[in-house]
Length: 341
Image (cartoon, rainbow, N blue to C red; front, side):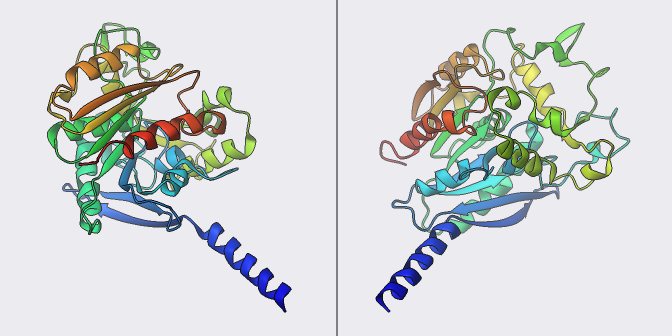
């Protein structure tokens, strides 16, 4: 009987461990009528409460592929929840499980560039309002995006200085000395700050191989890569019906970033009042060292500014097990650091 009781207890413990963290999905509506997907990830077994943390997707995959790849081990979102955050993952319009814009309909490739930064500001506003509504205890809200996601958050925070207690710019372009962007070849021949519309439509469609892209150079873990593609593709309900299957994603992030790195800033970080961490991988191909320098210089009204480089790390430091520990330590060290406001 004692053995049976112990066995039952072990099974119950195992079930509790496997059930944690809990994921729940919901949507919010923007001011201009679009439905924005949000996933909450919460670990009731966490030993501390670090408050809510908003995570925003990168410029090609949606938020689940960006933050919640749960193979072969726990996802980045799960690790942040285990550390004590109630994590909210959002898809900007045109990405993942959020509504696609009119510019992304099949046949609209040559119309206006889909999803510009000022539009995503509306999406973030709707999600922040809902997080604050659910946050009954009023714990300070932190936020972080991946590359373009951080740029969108910076744009939003510049217009809403008190929205975030702590803000992580991760692999984010910003401005500074023009040029030197590794992806500069996407520009028009007659204007370095303008996307070449003869080669880049309003939106693009990536096959599984293209979705993986440079990530294949960073890891050979087939289980991880397969799950990454699965999560990236699932937001586009028509992806499987194309030959070959491909994921639609907006060209706006590429066009906006091209402007930023060529002397045409989208916003001024000088109004941001959050505590800020500028986090960049040594071998990132999206952000530049001059982005870090210019952003740090412009954040003159921030409550505090910290800068950290992830030595030897790639653009995908938050996703790869052999690089992720340093990333998690840096983020949690910041969000759980000095007294939060």
